Length: 367
Ligand code: PMV
Image 1 (cartoon, helix red, strand yellow):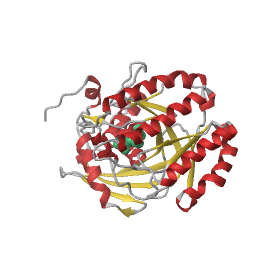
Image 2 (tube, rainbow, N blue to C red):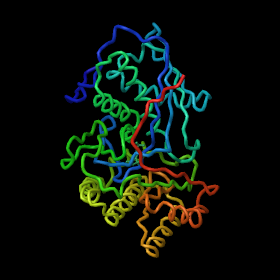
Image 3 (cartoon, rainbow, N blue to C red):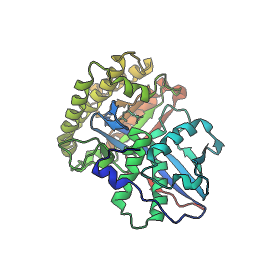
Image 4 (spheres, protein in one colour):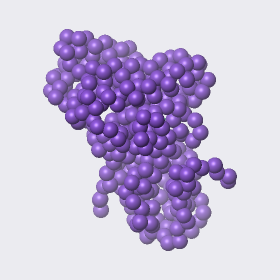
């Protein structure tokens, strides 16, 4: 196959390994992430049309164990288990992932794999597990590569893990490290790349330490429109170019906001990003709406609460109906009470998940 690769992609190509690892397993736990400036629209192999930035989360995570056993046949051989049960439905996605990353992880056909995965958040809660799941799997593969090549440095390890995760699911590349990760090249952000996520390189005010994210589970069902379809619809979208420019400009506006701890300006950017993302969905052809009536109820209550109390609470949305309620740590008690008393009844079975920004994935040593 002819490959037209950038310098950096070439650095990630893996050499053929002569030695094989003995039967064993590795385990990684990767968190989910919540974007402040949204990625919506891609080109090539999972490359973003604009820069995005996210808080890495802590409590919503996927734990994946990769069991491997050397084999001689040349096919891909693997099985996926979710919560201990075979989940053949995930396997086509993993096969596609393996095919995409084969040039970078050359040993995939040399082992029989058993992928055992569990999520800390309830199954079908409407919280996508693709970011945390692909990140955890990419890290397991990198750990195998490191065992085969112990000279791999930790920067390369994280960069390549993020690069591989991106090829599984775009936003997964922002789930390797934390607490603030940028993905997508931006002239104002040194080191930023379309190929992998990088740590936000500038000063961040303590107002943003341990930033709280309470996820209100408005609709736990399957999304009617997948994010793959949504990204694709940006190709013919009448407002696409303006949207990409808006996101890149919001990214730049966030730099002084994060440095100065300006929560009012933060709220304006974050809420506008969430609504712009959904506005793209509503103005694509075909158009669609992922928000539900209760999503809007919650947004209006957050605005009312903020007006009445001067709170710095705000909301953001993923590609779904659930609402991420974001607020600084010093408002934790008050906002929790507000959520319990005034927002929880707009959630399915009054369910919500309390999370907080975190430092990224961890290797798990288990026996
Ligand atoms: O990683 P994907 O292809 O599932 O896309 C995620 C897109 C959003 O969650 C809506 C925004 C983002 O930047 O995470």
